[in-house]
Image 1 (cartoon, rainbow, N blue to C red):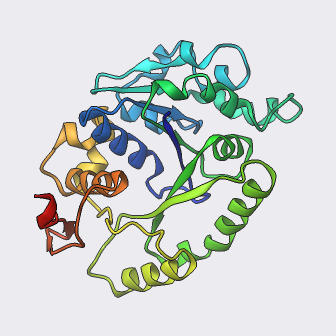
Image 2: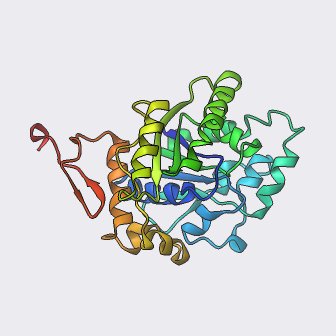
Length: 274
């Protein structure tokens, strides 16, 4: 049975879509069957895979409003083993339309349950708000990845994040767990970066990913070409860091970082596993 992971943060511009696109692409290249659900009306994950919104026949909007089955909305991308439920601007209307709908909180969950066995991983790209779309995603998810910046303003959102998790666990999904907190656009040269990481580790002990995603030009350029960064520039720091994140996500037999290469962590396998 596949694992459903919501990628979420109430703050915008923290790399949610970038994380969904690049983690999905790397796992797909490893042979895992992956589905992405673009649940953000901005549709950045959709364009990140090179899909034109004007060519989309069915989207997440049609799935949530019950117009189509989720199987009928899935689109195969040109990248190995990765499919997506795309998003268009119509999705913005779903927030209002679902308010008085029956089973409005469980719409996405019920749809995903029909295909969960068909995929190894299902990633949900959430909008930067705690609305109906995000609640649907967190209700459906097994775990959540929370991208955030290593800036003090990001700390202000921690209490909001904690409250969000409590609300969802108490009312909709008691099994929801944090897969990990992921620091993005990370600059290891700044003292404030290490200070923020240390503060977040106090709130979420053992839940902060060892891998940090650095600021990287190639990561910024790749979406405009409709490609995950590993297909755009595999040797870039951005591609390498997301590859390391996937090693960590998969729980592969890795030691703590032995050295740093170009500002990102490099892992070495345990001798017993070599």
